[in-house]
Image (cartoon, rainbow, N blue to C red; front, side, top):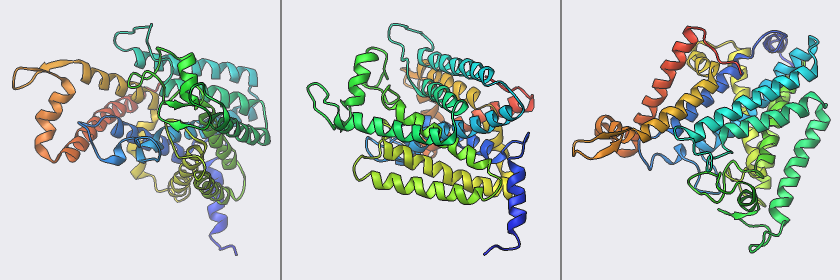
Length: 383
């Protein structure tokens, strides 16, 4: 039964995605995700609170939601942007050239972070967070630009099915099929074949952003694209967003009976669950920010989101420098600048987990001030 408020809600909801307007809720979601990334990536010391670190292997924590949320946001944003451009008559071929250029820049920024400051090309990591974003954005954009939603949905199912079959059935030499242990699975086998010497430095034998797990990560981006298309519906978009979020979460939980949640392997249940959680969080933000128009609280996150790539790159460079720059501590021994600052200013203030959290919050504050200055000067990086 419809209430009298329904037409007004639909009117506000339609206005939020009208031609030429931005979804403030999506910008706020991007900024929240950036802030969360800074918080979990820069602890003062280990161990911090468990939710501020990745799951040891199977399972998931708050930290494990951040990367898939980024890819999901990429999918939603590209859909809304491309749809408006296509409607005004932009050539799809020119849009593809823009996509290739943007993907190349994002990938090169990833190599910059991986190599800084020594750039040992013989062992530089060629995969990683930004490279995966670049690849997923490129492939998902091509699929979106040159297909309809049914083909896109079929592609998602195909990517998830192909990944599941490879992980479950391919007989890895010396190991067999169906193994999901750390470093002993089909994904690690492919990484060792094609990425030898160019993988994550903490393992050197497999990479959490490796080749095979990029398949379901593309699916995550395309699930975001599907949500972007729901947002362009004239009616009942809120209902369909709610149904999609709940359905994805339920399907991920169901499939986890047979394949575990695992961020490093980007398993199918993990991809579905994270897309569902992203849809649910976005729906809440959409209702608050773009329907109810309660926006003042979101300003800090909009500032973070306005230069997300810049903040990401700067946080990586600063984090690396804090580990590389050496200073003398009170005992006259060399110590990394990050460890020195933590021991000198944060460790005396609270227990170890709380002191680590305070250090991370200080890092978030520093990057926010930089983002605020860029926003104030209207300096935005458009790649």
